[in-house]
Amino acid sequence: MEKKYKVSVIVPVYNVEKYLAQCLDSLVNQTLDALQVIVVNDGSPDNSQEIIDRYVALFPNKVFGYIKKNGGLGDARNYGVQFADGEYIAFVDSDDWVDEKMFEQMYNFAIKGKHQIVISDMYCIYDGWTTGHIAKEYRGNNPYPLMEDYLLNCLDPAHACGKLYYHQLLLIQEFPQIWYEDMATIPVLMSYAESIGYLQIPFYYYRQREGSITQQNDKRTLQVICAWDNIISKANKQYSNEIVAAVYKSIETFIAFKPTYANEFLEYAQNRKDLFNNNPIIQKRITSGEQENLINKRLIPHIIHYFWFGYGPKTE
Image (tube, rainbow, N blue to C red):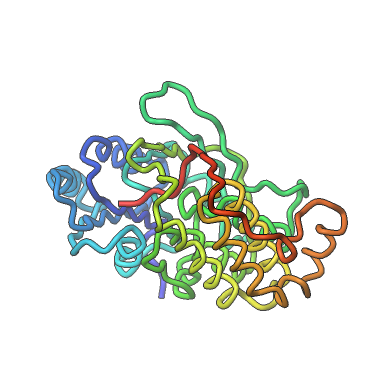
């Protein structure tokens, strides 16, 4: 069935009345015609709904508001997808904003290249700062990446935002209701895409708020294990070597930057030693010294404490 819109943008909303107008302004002012903006109020207790109502009234043919019981970011995205009538779908967090040419350029790039996923870069803004930095969404070494290159780097990082997805692709995998819903979902979608394109322009302005900083001792960090399991079990088996290698690399990263749970991550790797030991990409990297052999690594005594002040996933 032919879609009514070129792009549907889904915006989950929860406790963001301070930032929501800036986000919606950046969407209603897009240069792309035939754009649908789906705003999902995920049971927000603040005054966000008043702002949503105002934009729905001002742009009745473009902005569509929905209210649901609170279920988290992933659940709100899934809810919005059912109302999407665009050929492509995108996600924008309600405390972020985008360049006004983002969806016109990404849509045209997708159509021209027949891409089912288009990746763009992000501009990271830290709340209260006047400057930020560009975050590259593809960090591989191949300047002309193949599918294998994208999948080897699919968890470095794995943001849902800043990308364009062919509508039918999102029927393969919903966002799970866990803390690392992006990590659990995006690599799976990428593995089934017929073609991925990379537009090296930072269209997306990602706001890192103090309230969304991951606390070192938050046990929800361990939900990343559910994300790894989901990727391994549900990704396209055609790229199983690349997917498993990407998960192994992600485990290394979490051990380094989330040391409170380093033992749990090591145990996860060691409990799946057959999977990792039989992966030719991982073994080649270990032999060359590019990666550490986690299977033979000893568990870290809990009396040793490390501290890392970093940024994690945005959550409600």
